[in-house]
Image 1 (cartoon, one colour):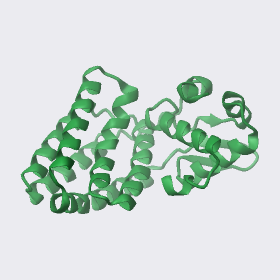
Image 2: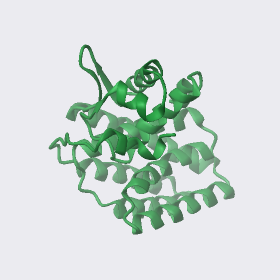
Image 3: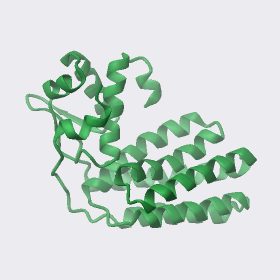
Image 4: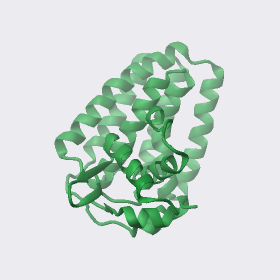
Length: 231
């Protein structure tokens, strides 16, 4: 996603980032209408700029563009949700192997620092911050070992997972996910590839198995959802 956005105007990138964050942080629900005129007014830009942002979000599968109706936050099907998690499990098995092979002391320190921040946010029941940090743990692993292609792909998949968990109202506690990250890191630090892979697989399966598959379609006001990112 980052590579695709690099050629976009700054104002377009800001809108893409804001809507993506609002979805990841569960401030915009699946099915929410993204009105060009309202978004343009929030950011003080033209509708052309907003349209460019919505096209990018559609390419990232976070937004659906419907002729004569407009743009809406995507509503992934059960089949799509299962496919997204299956791809993540496959990719993150490779990520664990590569991390164990390449990681140095500074990489482990970076993950420990991230987990400290993650645990603090989870303990405060900070819904906005915790969703992003829980996903960032996985992306950070790829970034630390220099696999930027994998980091980009995971970032896109994790954004879609956030939308999926919102749509299907995951009952899984954030504390459980964060505790599992701690255990994964311990296995990584021990260079125990088999254990780390098993823990990562169990972590992702547990997240997916908590999905209830009863879609939620309500959403906060658009201006409220994007407010913290507006200029």
